[in-house]
Length: 151
Image (cartoon, rainbow, N blue to C red; front, side, top):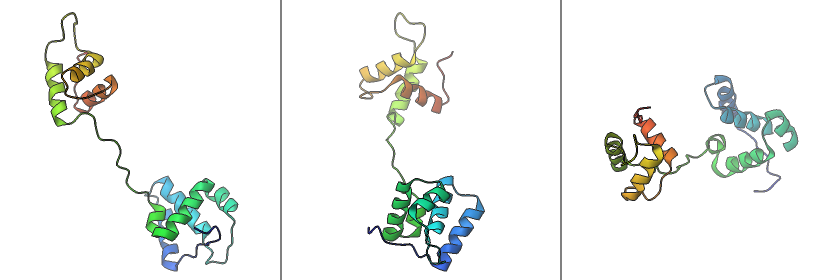
């Protein structure tokens, strides 16, 4: 992207951005991006510098450069909204959840009064149900299933 490309919004794009800002139903990031795009727009005769837009829109300089790059390469919607992020797959799937519930409902190991999160995590690994898992992930899974260890 050339550093000298300037944004000239069409009237319908400008109206869409103004409505987006006024509606108040979008995230703060989207509203900040819309505000920055309006400030970058040169179709109304305003010629603001990147520094002026950064200060007025209260976003970083990198955000402005990314915003311009996305606008020129993929259009207004891509400039406003981020792509979906896939995130990490959950460690505990349905089969592992079933084993976890069975463990929680079973008697604790010899020498223990009750199951602990660390004991459960170690048992899931020793039974080769899961390769590795932390006690925190086990606790999160139990919380998601609305189960407790009876404390």
